[in-house]
Length: 495
Image (tube, rainbow, N blue to C red; front, side, top):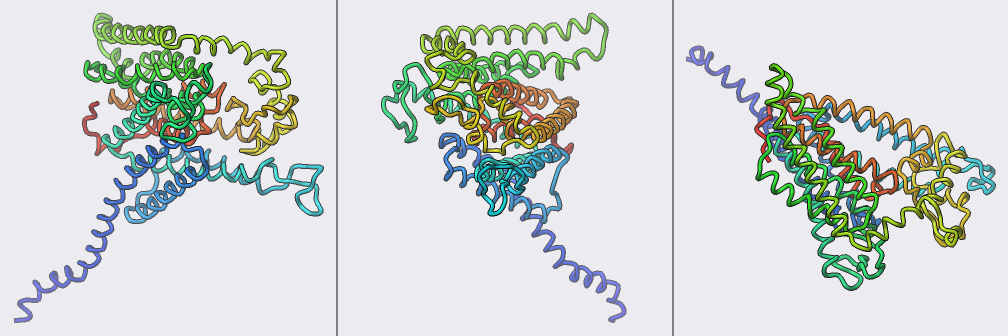
């Protein structure tokens, strides 16, 4: 009898022996599947919370943000161990940023700078950084930004998640706009939900913050990035009236808010942004693919409506922008625009008291010439510049008001080389991304590029990327512009 049952019993015993192992694998797979969406949507929640308290500038809130990101990074490691999926191709973008962290570590560890006052007994050498503590904080900030970008690149794996990412960026911009307009309409005394927010009456000619920001220029940076995505969606193919209507309903208040904020750099950057996105639409997909097949008559028939509709939309938006500046801005904006001449030519009465860009930039250049290779250390600008600041000291520059000059002064030629390395890698990833034929994801890439371009222009005269939420949204735009969805998960993507 046993010999009869033997052919049946052996396979059954094999199943019993392998069942615990299969159960373990199944449990790991279920846990990994639970962690995957939890990590992604938790990152989005952290981004929204980071936007609230002045854009996360106070040390205590910045510490909470970094702890949250690093905790999600730990979950990333656990999920990677369970699923066996760690990195994607786009993670190569983060390598230059890791190199920048390594440079900052060198700046606080190697005593290579001569000084008349010794910090190390028996030597006259100090760390490269003029402020090792601030450089250490910079390392923590940049590492948190790297982890946040890595999380988005790893877990933006479906069309719905990419759409959620886009909506979070637009939603943060719209929420900040609504809060800023509410402040302008109702705030009459210091404190408006946030303690340090001052009313516009505190400085009638502008200069106070806007939205949840202490500095009005920092709001403009955020609005530029959100507005770029909105414009990319609005001008995508095929044109739909419902999408066009809600995009205009979001874009116009953002533009009005930037005008009210009085940010001259924001006004210029958004104007150039609209022209930039118009150019991208005609040299990149989806417009170029209309001319692939057919004779000249077919080309005209296909490309004509495409061209006319977008030219009309772009021209209309530019007209609205100009009218907004004239009608909404009023005397305060006119005063701020008139004061531009003082930024490039200091008044005699302010020559030894106030600090303008026309005086900050030459003194920064003098500092760069004295520290050309590795700079004065990330975060060390505010101390190193005192040697070159010839004014009274009533106002001492804390930043270079030009992020490119500050990168050169803080990281030297090595820091600039790392920055160029990052830009080249990003451009290659964008070109690979635009080769995909889906119209709307391509439009999102164009919108993200428009936001990045506006920030690049604005950074010539301001330092908005020093604010945590702005740096996070900038990294998010880079993810939107470069991330690719796995082929098996390409479902219809409608907005």
